[in-house]
Image (cartoon, rainbow, N blue to C red; front, side):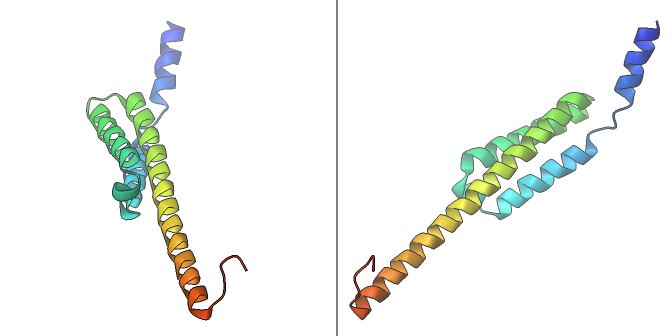
Length: 113
């Protein structure tokens, strides 16, 4: 009997995963704002699916599953945002290098010097 009470108390001590769900929503939103749909489409889709599953689990009262899925959604969304930022940075770098190359050609300076 004591073990059952202890187990119920341990389960009851965790608050609902509202914080985790809010963090996942914010992470997915930030990834979308960082053009993840263009540069990290697979990851942002995976994050959105995990968030939807987390919200559905929460609605069914499966808080542990909702918490786990929300944390997963946030992590994958963060990865999508990072990959998107990396792609944007690499594109900008390539543009700057091309610009430098064109300027060197105009000045009659060879690349690499």
